[in-house]
Length: 178
Ligand SMILES: [Zn+2]
Ligand SMILES: [Zn+2]
Ligand SMILES: [Zn+2]
Image 1 (tube, rainbow, N blue to C red):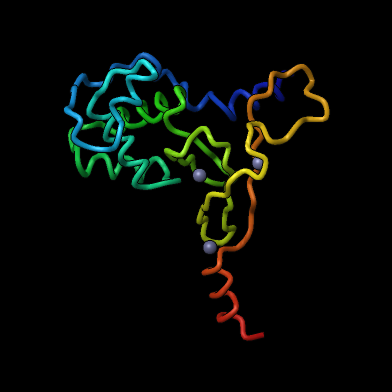
Image 2: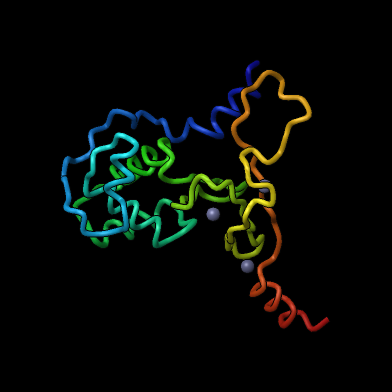
C-alpha cells in the first residue's frame, strides 16, 4: 500500500544502499599522483584518501556518463587488485556525499559523472544511448516547481531531453532512401 513512496525511495537510494555502507575499503593511502584535487575533495567531505577512491574519481572524470562496468574496467586497468564490489561501494559512497552524480535514465543502466552541483540536464539519443550535457536554463535545483508537493521535501526535479543524435539521424537518412 505504500507502493508510491517505496518507488521514490528505490529510485533515489535503495540500489545504492545494498548493505554496502559499512563495508571497509582497503586502506591504501595513496600519494596525490593523479587527478586535480581528488585528495582535497575527499577530505572536504570527510572521507579518507584511498587509492580506490582516487582511481574511481579519475575514471569517472575520464569517462563522463559511463556505466558501472565501464568505470570498473577503467579502474581495474590501473589497479587490477581492486575488486568490483569495492568499486561499486566507492561509487555509492562518492555519490552519497555528492562527489559524483548518479543518473539512471529510464531503460538505461546507472551512469556516473563528476560534473556535480550545477543542476545540468541530459540529452539522450533513443537510438544509440549517447548522453550529452545541457546546462540548466534556470540554474537552481530544482528548476521545476511542483504544483502540489504532497508534503514531500523536494530536492530534485529530473529533466531529460530524449531525441536522436546527429549520427543516428544521418545514418537513418542514408539507410532508408524512401
Ligand atoms: Zn545516437
Ligand atoms: Zn551530465
Ligand atoms: Zn533546468
